[in-house]
Structure formats: structure tokens, C-alpha cells
Image (cartoon, rainbow over all chains, first blue to last red; front, side, top):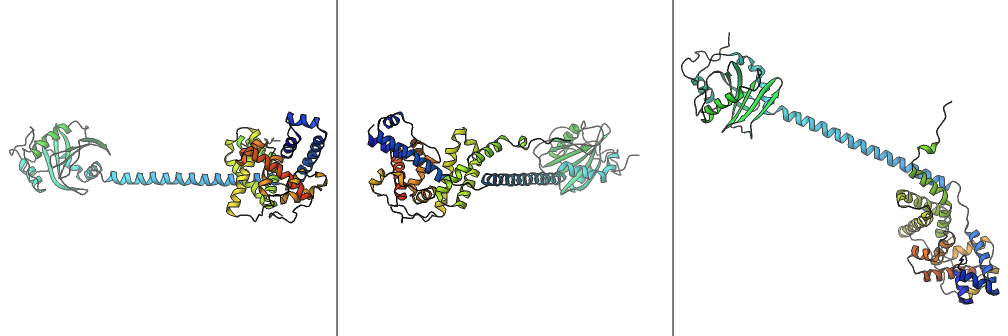
Length: 255
Length: 181
């Protein structure tokens, strides 16, 4: 390293401890003097740059940071609260909508219809095929097969928005309320249990059959559904009602 | 009598790290910011913005030794943003100072006040690498990385920065202003 290079390095990096630089310094009196002047200048430069730091600067920064964090925390809590409230409203709204939807469901409407017709389940005398056919005719429905035996009640009843034929079939002494909804179509058979009533919804060719009983469970539903499928759709075999022995006063209550 | 637990036991490690960072470097950051912008209030704002930004990305700081250059980098960017928003009224010194000044003796340099005055007149492009070296403790290579320049160019700027300071102290081009107080 020559003097020129030494001076350039010294001018750019006076604090350098590069051995080559220090070696030249130690071997050249003029450069050593320049090095000492440079060190003195650096000390004064550092002293000049060392302006006083405003009192409390770090504390003010920490205060700003802590305040900002608290505001963020409050905002986060508010957002979380708003989300929770929205969720509750959504759940409440959903529950209400579900409740209203459920109240208009076929099982709910059928069960709600029964208290006004509860005494029909106590009728025991068959009403006969002509009365049954007449009951369906009132709803514009013509039976395609023989009417079932042991039908003790028939009436045209409104159930919610549906115009139904309300019947009572008895199977081994157990009364089953039957609601036939012409033109109402459901996708599949399904059982339900609601407010103490066992029920089954059965799709037929041109309508829907709803069976209900509050006595002994769903056991008679297969027989009743088969009988009414034969009568309404004209399919299969069933217990058939005769025109003989027809109650002259259909719908009379059992003693 | 019920004993109170130390307050810091409830402070999470990230918060403690930030407090330590702030207390350790706020002074250096302020000095750097002051000489970068030349205004006390602005320098304090820069320090606060720098540290608040550091808080947000504190997880990026892996080693304590990297803290100071990391903070200086953030501060430089904050200062650059400030310039983008509101360009400061600066005028560069003439680059063509006599090369003879490079060999001028510093015996005539004045006291700290004169040196500060000279520093405030130093053009930004010389002042910045000089501050990174003297206040930031960075090497030429580190400054080159920080400024996105070649190490040789940084060496030249550092050399010229000192010579211009000495030249100003000797009364050369004292009429030139660059907008610092």
C-alpha cells in the first residue's frame, strides 16, 4: 500500500483496522500524522453528531405503541362482538324461519288438525263403500278400486292450505286417522312422531296419504296404506268394504 | 400485606422485546433522523413511525445484533416516504469541490457547533453514507447494500463527504445552503 492508497482509505474509513492499512501507518511518519489527525477529526465529528436526544422520547414512543395496541384490542373486541351478535341474530333468525317452516309442514298441519276431530277416532261402525265414495267425490276424486273395510268416518276437511278427505280406518280395533290430499305430491314415504301422535306420509299416484294414530304406534300403517292405495290408485289387493251392513247413520260415535 | 407482582411479569415477550428495542435504539435513531432531516420535531416523528412500524414486523427481527441496521433501514424508508409525500426544499452542494480540499489539513476545523453547521450543509448524498458509517456503525460493504450501490462508489462518497466537511469548515463554499436549519 502506498501513501496515496493509504490516504484514500483513511479518508473513507478512518476507523478501519485493516492490518495492511495499519502496517503502512506504522511505517510512514507522514501518514501516521495524517492518521492521527483523522482520528481526532472522527472524534470531533462523532461529538458534533451527538445531538441531545429529547427527554422522554422512548417513553412517548412506548406510550403511542401501547395506546395503539389497546385501540386495536378494543376494535378487535368490537369486531368479535359484532360477529357474535350477527351469529346470534342469524341463529335466531334461522331458528324462527325453521320454526315457521316447520309449523307449515305436513306433519305439523295434520297433527294440528286432530284435536278438532278427536272424537272421530271413537267411531266403530263401518260407513260403507257408497259413503266413502261420496266423501271422495266431494273432493273431485273418483275411487279406482274397492273402498277398504272398517272405515268408520269420512269428511272433507281443510288442513292448512290443503283440501283433504278425512277418514278413519280401523285395524284390529285400532283407529287410524287418514288424510288424503289430492294433487299434493311428496317424494317419499316417511314416518314422524309429533305431540304424541305417530304418523306416516305416503306418496300415491295423484296425491298424498297422511296416517295418524295416538294409540299403539305405527304398526297398522302398512295395512291402512295398502288398503287406500288399492282404493284410490286401483293397485293391489285390499280388505274391501261391502255395501251390505252399511251403517245407516255413518259417523256415529261408539257407545 | 398483599405483595404486588412485578408489572413486567404480565407483559408478553414480544412487548418486552419492543420496549427493550425502543429504549436501546431510540437515541441513535433520533440522532440519525435529526441529521437526515435536520428538524427536531420531524426527527421525533420519524423515530416514532420507525419504531411503530418495527413493532408491526417485529417477528422479522431474528438477531439482536441486526436490530440497529434493521431500524435504520426502516427509518430511511420512512424518510423517503416523507419526501414522496412532501418534497423538502433542498439544494445540493456543488460536487466539484477542489480536489485539493481532499488533502486539506483538518487543523482548522472548528468546534462542535461549526462542525454541526458544516454537517448540515453537507449534500444529502454524502451525508447519508457518512451518517450510516459514523452513527450507524456500518462498514462500507454494509452501507453499499443499504443504499443499493457499489462498495467502491460508497468509498468515494465517504471520502468526499469528509473532505467537503473539512472544506466547509475552512470557509469554502460557505454560502451554499441545502435547506437544513
